[in-house]
Length: 330
Ligand SMILES: Nc1nc2c(ncn2[C@@H]2O[C@H](COP(=O)(O)OP(=O)(O)OP(=O)(O)O)[C@@H](O)[C@H]2O)c(=O)[nH]1
Ligand SMILES: [Mg+2]
Image (cartoon, protein in one colour):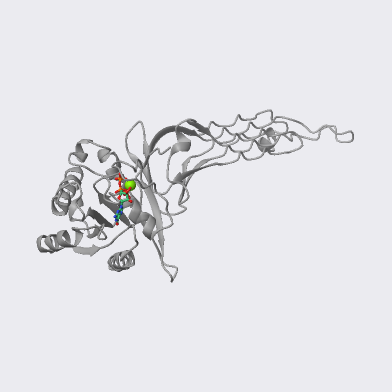
């Protein structure tokens, strides 16, 4: 299951209590105070990772407390620190404070960790109160409670490039052709139901990432179809790859598809249609595609058009090579 939003409660561990105790040994009748301090509670740490692509782990369990500190003991034994709780979340997760709605942190880096709540301090044991004026202190402290916070996690995928296109245009087929990802492909619209990121490997070990999202249709920004629910997953890509069905089996012209796509992107987010882009003119193996490509090239001059057949992996190498060059331009 794909989940890109979750609300959870995180809580630092409570500090262990300090101990009140006195040394009682056979030959040291007045051995003095020896109650150890309590250990601090553990922190809750968010760790962004490339290996997760969904927040599904955070919708069933909602409370995430770190371990409490252990109480201090006699014989000057300090309590152990509570263990930190490390929550792995997908890279690109934006973390908000539910109460204020403010963004606390945007975990957009790889393996970035962030301490979201701290554990409470451990309490002092009576040994720590020993002084010249008080040789037999009986004070001890309780441990402090850890910080608590209710947070909203929202995943906004981070990839170098995002595939945008109508349902059935061949986005998932293209992602399969250029990366190791295996999104489902089928001859009907709305096959892809959630975003997926594929890694494109080059022979020189260079890598780039491409996100596939469900198909867009007219009105997507109004949440028609699978809609703008998923546009946030391409919002943070550097380059858009418009995937157009050049065979226009459904009687639609690739150019009309392109203008509709651009309109939907712009309505979702101002400026998004101006983002750097390339057009993958797909399904070039089918009849009519060559004719449609000529017409498209006459109409679109400002965006590079690369004819491909995702199914046959024709010219997809050129597409990824160009993508790499464009990304390298910064
Ligand atoms: N002939 C031909 N068919 C293709 C090509 N690329 C994709 N297809 C076919 O087009 C259909 C849709 O492909 P998908 O990759 O599932 O399309 P999509 O854009 O991901 O579709 P949604 O996930 O529904 O938005 C499948 O039957 C593919 O086999 C191509 O280059 N040539
Ligand atoms: Mg698909």
